[in-house]
Length: 225
Image (cartoon, rainbow, N blue to C red; front, side, top):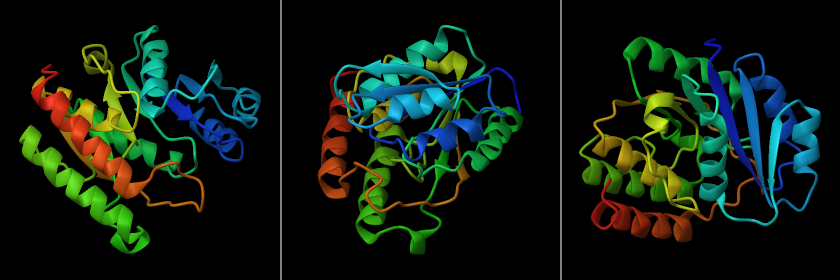
């Protein structure tokens, strides 16, 4: 595994899963950064005990805010690439080598882990809202996007430094795709394992997809890169 890769995990109330993820990622990356987004449990302690660098926000600011802060911390050491994973156990660290291979061998700037190929393992509401959202983003960017809501990504370090991300919530993923595409980034996809934990995710499929779509339109029309 490439040594100059930093992993960033935004985390909210993930004390049961974050430590395992950190330990699984450590042999694969140079640094693991966990941004504790105002958790009410022992997320920060669990991440720190597992060996992660932990930044704790005093209150819940949203996934996008936590992710942006994590990117700032990661970019301080000028990594070759930044791996983005959710800390709730829905992303398998064992899939990271496939994303890294696509980045290295295909010369991609942004690799997105896609889940929609495993339709039977995805709750119906999650599948259809993601599918519709991905169609909208594909139309906006002119790029075929298979899973626009996936937070499992590998972002080239040079591209990460050029993306002026602003979203505080789940729209961060769509904003990243829109602004990366506007910069001519080479975006690719790698199938990943589909994992859904009962009660593990804070994502509300219909409401949050609506918010994401509205935010995506704003970023495309009013916040031109």
